[in-house]
Amino acid sequence: MWKALASNAITFLIVILFLLGGLILWGQSQYNAAGPLDQPICLRVPSGSNMSRVSKDLVAQGAVSNGRIFRVGADYTDKTQELKAGSYLIPTHASMAQITDIVTRGGASTCGTEIVYRVGVTRSTVQLRALDPATSRYVEQASYLPGEDAVPAELTEALDSGDVRFRVALAEGVTSWQVVESLNAIEVMIGEVTEIPAEGSLAPDSYEISRGADRAELIARMQRAQQVILAAAWAERAEDLPVKTPEEALILASLIEKETGVAEERRQVASVFVNRLRQGIKLQTDPTVIYGITKGQGVLGRGLRQSELRRETPWNTYVIPALPPTPIANPGRASIEAALNPDTTEFIFFVADGTGGHAFAVTLAEHNANVAKWRAIEAERAKQPD
Image 1 (cartoon, rainbow, N blue to C red):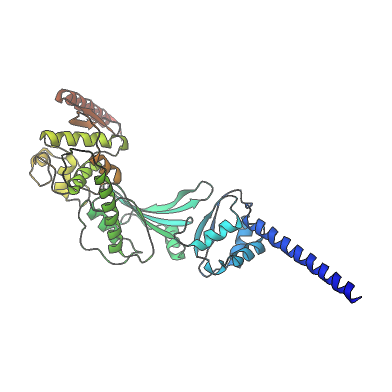
Image 2 (spheres, helix red, strand yellow):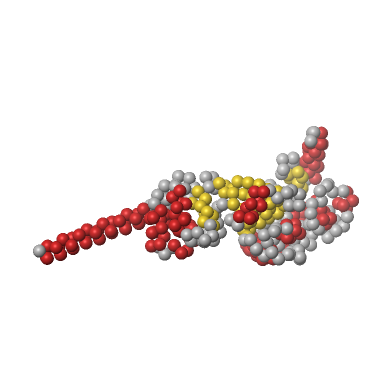
């Protein structure tokens, strides 16, 4: 009898172990299988949250089919205690394992709301944006011009919520003075910047910052980024250029940056300046005259006068026979690369063509004809009602 009972108990135990093993294998397959999510979602993990709350949110949003399996899987992989607060983009059909990795990996949030401080050439703006998970594109919620507009209520609410990312975005061609003025006005940063960085030394780009970020440290990041860009472009430069140092290349790049916003013609503009430098022809570019007047402190806001074109300043390339002594703005990567690898052309002239780009010419006669066309376009536009 006892043998029969022992035999039955062993059999029962084997069955239980077999079922338990099958259950574990099934749970593992569920944990690693593609999830039910048909559209991406933005999952917010508040500070102080836990895997139990996260699992309930995921179930409610249709990202996981079983919250218990999600929690057990996270615990089994020793990730339960590694949960990071933030807002995370959960892609379609993400497995529970993938979601666990996303919310425990840390680093910058990948979705949600962000405030972007845009430092532009003519104006600076503050923009509130939110990521649309369905398109993975940021959508503007509100914006304003500092010093001109009232701060929108939506932006104030986002600042007070504590659940928002911050970003500083520098446009190509901004001056160092404009950058410092804008950074000193950002209320979530600390440490006033009193010294203007060298013109051209800041890399135009988008920089993520945190609340309480130090302004001087951000300036240093921008400078390091520009040094890396310039060094890489200098290492790949064309041969026999009339610029002999990385500093001269940066000056030339700033002229290219201020002369055109059309990406496709940067290397053509560069070729004009390079050809002129090789032939000893004055560069005669208006942005250098403007910089001699403003020193990069704001926008001139009007056309240049003939007396200003003739006035001697260190930057006026209608007067000086070479490159100005410093950059006249902070050029972006594309302009730096164009300066060091220009197109091979015979162009020595260019003028606006009315489309936002320029008409290029080899001879003065061709250039004069292009200028006449541009003046006719200007005259026609002047007749149009505002």
